[in-house]
Length: 287
Image (tube, rainbow, N blue to C red; front, side, top):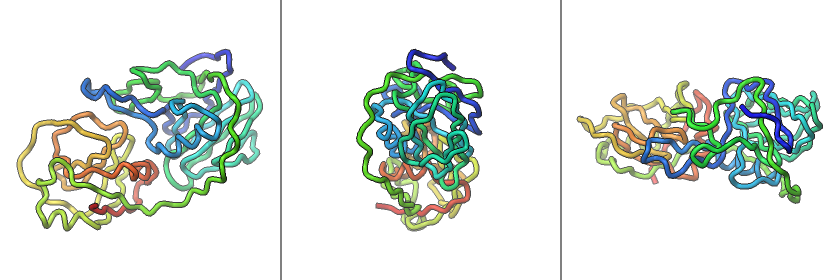
């Protein structure tokens, strides 16, 4: 992907099933059909940056279920957050959710997710890949931005500053699997019975969920007949296709869609969507 830079680089030994680079996203291009992308679990990515003294827009590695194996060419400080997983440096256990410095040549293994789906790896200095349309994020819908990581990639690092004082111990408590909904621009496509059926309903996360959308299976919602012209879609939009099974659009969602958006997920609940696994149950609540 890149070459060793003046501040060192990290080699990707094994990218796992899907590892990408993500920052806070690519804003301002939806009118041209370019998704925003960015870390799906924004809180976990921000914590990883903070632990290594990074800047708010530094790129991090986002892994998916299977983890990633890395080898720094110089000593580097890193932190792993997000999905619970084992982290090792040359076989030695490394704390999850804390900054640690590993020597040059160490084999850093971010193991498979034990709970959750996505882990985040931040490095002091950030990853110095060239931005595309103002962002270092990989978009998996149109593949704008850096390509997905592959074995042998070298990720150049940026200059490091002084490490911050260690923050207070971070205790990550499991969140109740509840998504709060507000009525969307096409709320009238559900009648009173439909809204009653949706509010408080339990849905399972479908296996084909990804960075584009969280697909849910459960009670079928009867919507009004007919079709609409494609219209703009926002992050967290809940689209209702003819199947009657809701889809929650996430960071790599298309910028327009032709199915009615009956609701929108509260912004504070979107990070939860990043960590729900296929088969997990989630409760929908109208607020």
